[in-house]
Amino acid sequence: MTWSTRFRIRESVRGSLWLLPLVGAILGALSGLLGQIVDQSVDLPAAWEYSPSTASAVLAAIVGATAALTGFVVTVTVLVVQMATGTFSARYMRLWYRDRMLKATLAVLIGTLTFSFALLRRVEQDYVPNLGVTVAGGLVVTSLLLFLFFFDRFIHRLRPVAVTALVAQAGRRTFDESMRARAVPDAPEFRFDPYVSNQEAILVVRASEAGAIQAVDTRGLVRWAREHGSRVVVPHVVGDFVSSGAVLMRVYGDSPDAGTAEHALRGMVALGDERTIQQDTAFAVRIMVDIALMALSPAVNAPTTAVQVLDHLGETLRQIGTTDLEALAGPRVEGVQPAVVMRMRRWEDYLRLGVTEIREYGAASIQVMRRLRAMLEELREVVLPTHRAAVQQELERLDATLAERWSGSVDLDLASTADGQGIGSPPSRTTPSDR
Picture 1 (cartoon, rainbow, N blue to C red):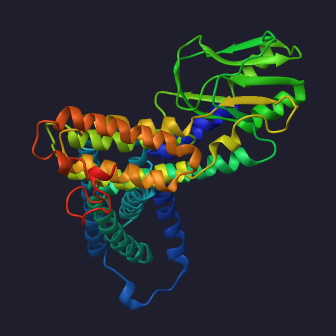
Picture 2: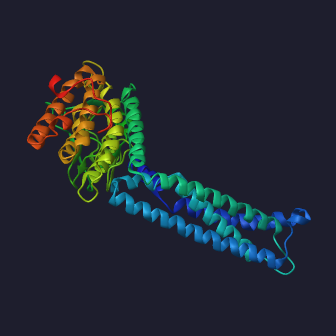
Picture 3: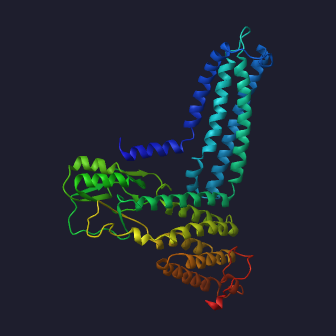
């Protein structure tokens, strides 16, 4: 089994809404059978004994209640789907259906249902699973409490700012992990520009199917290249969409067995229908920008939401901008040919992705323009000196946008002032004339 196949299986398991509830259903049924065996060998106090009619009524009520609660959980899930696609971003769904609380709630509810049903069918005039009925009662109470936690959690997560915070947190975690992975001795060599070689590639590995690059097994590529005395060049960044038959990677150096090599190398790149945040911080930035753009659409018209997105977006860009990306690019050891060469994004790429469309679609909103300027001015102060020129260019583009959209407006001075809250903060130390 190739690495990409294992990756897709893991992703499928993590994203599956039915697997954990199925496990809960099976465990519930098996526990019901086991409970009958235990019940026959345990002496219970009289308070825990039930008549056949009472046990049947209790278990039937539990089965009905858990079935109804499961349906309500599904209804809430559908509501979140509607909200996510209509108000947030459809790309947020990838985080939503991986939530462990949702899966745990469904698993406990369905497990309680199958456990109670397994006991219900064993109730007879001369036998009552007393211990099992008591346990079923405890399980239904646990299910209710878990449902309340679930409901509270996802009611709060219906707010766009909460969704943005989750996406930003995932993006920053991915960025930290990627930086640590790139700093280890056996990491590939990362470059901003396409790799150029005087040699002709001995092998060109092409994609067998179309899809977005979701992840790359960098350690596997390095290990394979060293074992075969070759150099592997991946001309794409994680997140790129490659067409069927497009170049996936090129191999230089010694000539390996083409058929075996293609299968092995192709199996180290996972392709899928859409991007993931797992190795792609830019995708987290993309989702946050999409939420802001959705808020700025005429149908929603909620610029305050876009301002809140800029709060979390600015923190993510700050983390990227204070990292020396240039130190990770270029030869790892001077004069030594790298085993694997991969492309990476520049600081300008992240900044342009996070700013351009919000500036374009939020140009008509005073508070978005003010908050965007405040974010850029803050970034200019905190990012590395080598990254400040790009921030200054974005500020100049912001000035040009304001001059075009607000030149004839009485509110030009307001729109040109930085404000950390969009509108409402104390006056900045700098004024438009100071710039």
